[in-house]
Structure formats: structure tokens, C-alpha cells
Image 1 (cartoon, helix red, strand yellow):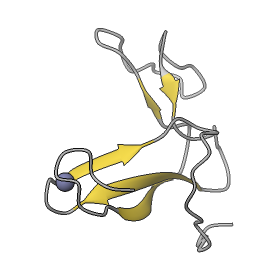
Image 2 (cartoon, rainbow, N blue to C red):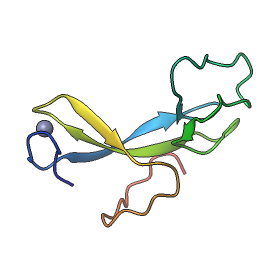
Image 3 (cartoon, rainbow, N blue to C red):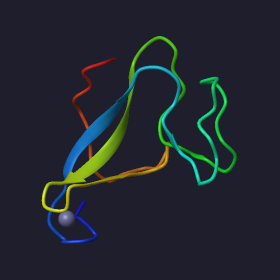
Image 4 (cartoon, rainbow, N blue to C red):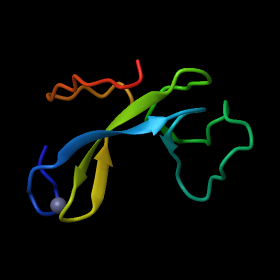
Length: 86
Ligand SMILES: [Zn+2]
């Protein structure tokens, strides 16, 4: 995947998710006190977890210092074979 800002190749990696779930939420939604609740109209980026750590795949551009990731279950054309957690 190339960076949409500078068009250089992005580095594939991941964001670790140790408890709860990783999501994007619109302003002015608040962060819920309970980890099993997600804000209205939020977009889930990683599955919910309480025990085993999970990971959310993401691309990083070193030039622009920017991370881009897809919604959970989004299919990518690139293979990610290393899995340090599972
Ligand atoms: Zn860039």
C-alpha cells in the first residue's frame, strides 16, 4: 500500500489490543467507562478481547508520520504471515 499523501510505500505492521476493542469514534462521543460498550456510530478496528491479546493491522508512512488502517474484516491484498501473539 502506498501513502495517499506522498505516494511512497507504507510499512505493514499492527497495533496491539490487550483488553477491550480498538475502535474509531466520532466527536463528541465519549470513551465509555465499561470496555464492552462502544460509542454510537463508532467503527470497530479490532475484535473484542479480554484474555488473549489481538492485533489490528495498520500501515505506516515514515515520511508523513501517518498510520492508516482498515475497519475490522476489511480484506487486504497483502499477506501478513507473522503473528507473535496467537
Ligand atoms: Zn507519506
